Length: 192
Image 1 (spheres, rainbow, N blue to C red):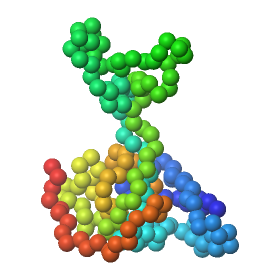
Image 2 (image 1 turned 180 degrees about the vertical axis):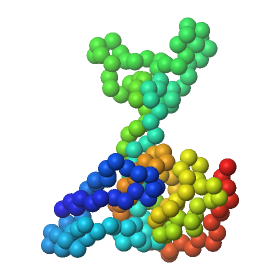
Image 3 (image 1 turned 120 degrees about the vertical axis):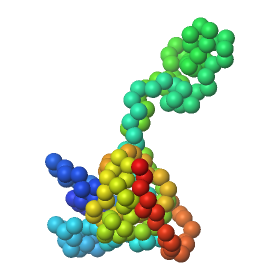
């Protein structure tokens, strides 16, 4: 069963409309319907769903980089000096055989780079809080600003630029059971 929920954007940036997102539930129909009735019309916070020390999967749309050549897009090696003299140093050495008389889809070529949905697996939840002043450095985060509402601290990278919507779900891959992490110090020095 899928439950539709309205998400509260924690960045404090006003939106013209709410983001509507569907999340997968446990699969037990009676239990899921009862839970949906219980939370219908209410705001669901991260602390209601996750706990500190849990492993989560983070899904978001990556940063868009526009149209890029095969060197940046696929990591193709730049040609040697002999090929560069002809003015074609940043290209693929061969795009295929004589037969079949077409270019196969596996050949790295230029095109749209970035702006694709990606999922980062097994990110550890370090801390879930309601007061953003606990973690906001002096002057705010670079290209983001001040955190005013609830927050969630994860270990590792999160795909996408700042202020882009991120979907956090329970981890689907197996992971080792560990104790709840202890945060000793959070630096609030200015990032400027």
